[in-house]
Image (cartoon, rainbow, N blue to C red; front, side, top):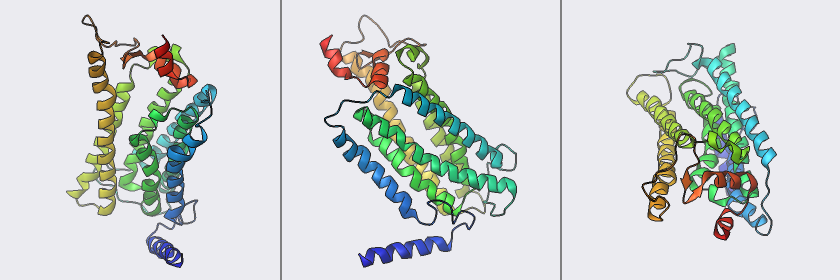
Length: 311
């Protein structure tokens, strides 16, 4: 135990030696182990403790809660995007080619520093997405992609706020908050019920937008490997490789969700007589089930597979 405590102390001392003093005393910033502990607890709760707790309980419906939560996430994402933008990316002060971190106390710089911390904090609020999946017993939604994406991001952003709260790396947050505005708006519509299904034909394109986001972040980060810029190379690799990892995870999700679904439906006889998946707002067929039923499951937490079998 003494060895572990000494190791923790030595790591904290080393990291604090190079930290940005402006964020040193902010919540969770004094040590990475607070954030690491929360992330590990999140994984344990959603993969082990939560499902065990819900094992003999009926799923919660939470329709109004879901609508309210996603509405708040839309507002939070809009505010974050605006703050990161006004901290540099929307003012003309930031360069896409090379933007070193400004460690001064200039008002616009401090605005970006604060926005960076709130972006870090937003990664914790996104844990609630998975908690709702557990409470509604939608365990198929708690995929490897979902858990890795949510579980890794707070730890990743912590290093940015600790050492480089501004400059080149904030482009990640600027793009990501914009995507989250659209994403949580989609979730809000989906939570409103099956009657809104006709407005949700663009989920496939939302996933595409997420992948485009990671490509843009990759290009933006890795260009500094070929350009002279007063920005830490370690963070270039840190951000770039995260974008690579998430791109391929989302790509695999895209293939499994959209390409294989159509192929499986064809094999199972769901597409007969030359029929094709419905488009332009019509309810598509997903594994032989109309999207209206998928949406009903999303909102009401009903056992979809049992209902299909009984029809």
